[in-house]
Image (cartoon, rainbow, N blue to C red; front, side, top):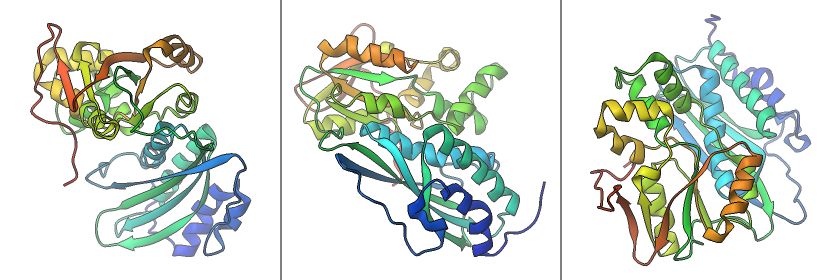
Length: 329
């Protein structure tokens, strides 16, 4: 590995960051104080910002390329929850004193790959040094037809509750990296770690939900907590049949070996799937959209009068997890 220390700030920008901005003329080669972004007729701009801190959101020995991709993807997941198409992003790097040039090279190579995958371009940012842990922040901009952005507040009483993909893999992947789930087969452990390190934002599907979903949110803090946010904003109660929550084979295997992991699966976070509500009469359209994107979409419950989130077991009895979701404070 190249053990060289970091070059100067402007050399680092020219060598590793400016190439990421070549697809957007308004970035001006990252040579000005700010980017120039022309308005898009007929569209609203949607903006979101996320931060990843070493030791909190990623581990020090995680592959740098996967860290870059995760940083971008968690923001793209926010755009997907609003029904927005990715457009541009801004990047702030607060690099610790131990950071080497090879780390930056691998980190930006991951960003370059995902820029192509998700059709998004760097527009600007900032690069600084810090005596603390490496801290990364990304602001993503998306576009959605004017007045059509999805919100958490639109669920109606009697709507169906849906979720994309599978739930619990991210939290279980972190548990594996921290020494848990020791009895799992290696393939299952690798799957869970992969899902933790590389979430899959449902960008195309999210765009397609405009006009179908009544409310939406991405699952970052845990299914129960995030559904709770949606229910609070919509003024309703969400009821979920725990047995209907979709799990991967790896998560099923982990849960089979330790039933106490149910709380981790339903409240652990880091899934970055879309959780949304819709009129149940739109089921066929929703599944057709899912099929076009090769995506699994599962109805897990309903909304009704009241507040909060109620989990039910197969006999219809309430389930208490003892935790609601990830909290920073």
